[in-house]
Image (cartoon, rainbow, N blue to C red; front, side, top):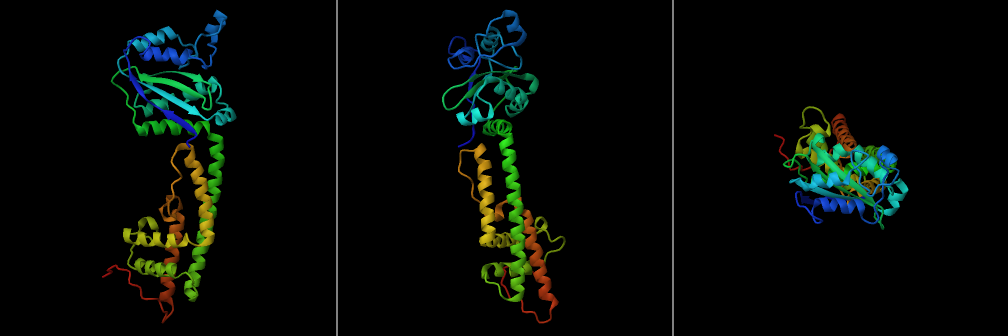
Length: 325
């Protein structure tokens, strides 16, 4: 389950009474469970606590003025609900209103951009409710220009991603460090396995016939390639051969073990953002491992040259299905 939940319905402004946006604002600011916030100098002068928990760009929110503004507004108003699991909120300090207020203030321009509203036109109020298993914030957001602003699934994803990155920054930093170590280990193991495979093919002792077959096909295909012998520069048909070799390598126990570890860490990263189960992909489908593909190309090219170097070398005749004429 995603670590941060964001829901973003909207209402249309201009409807008065308890059922309209102004009524909703009063509800989220005063309902049971809302955390009241001090309002700086104004509270000091009044020497009394606030009667609501609303916060926004300014320290002091006048609920009456805010409700009047919403009653007179005739555009769309988004009513975001942003929540964490109780254990995450308590561990990371998001079980109190000031932390949420600081978070939203720091990223109000990012939220505005996701909603396609210029920062200068962006208006918002929010309140924190410390309730149940999911402490959460209710946030009302809109543009001062009624015809501005729209929010689609991609925009909601951007809001969710931005806030997730900030809230879980330290945890994710450690996770990304682990992922980097795992990636590097996989690349080293794949390169070593590729070199060992090439050596076995040259010596005629390779016990991976499918990988050997693909390597000879790739070596022959590279013979007709001009320019740099790097994966990114290869024709599509030759890239397909490289991918097939990489997929064969994924079956090798040492490579498979390293890739399994990397996929586990990648799944943890994806779990911060998505409710969907971790996506399973072949090693060849991962853009992060272009280095492995280039290692395959280099070894296939070396294999091709070694077959040409020794007079009478017996390179298998392989039907690649490609016309090189």
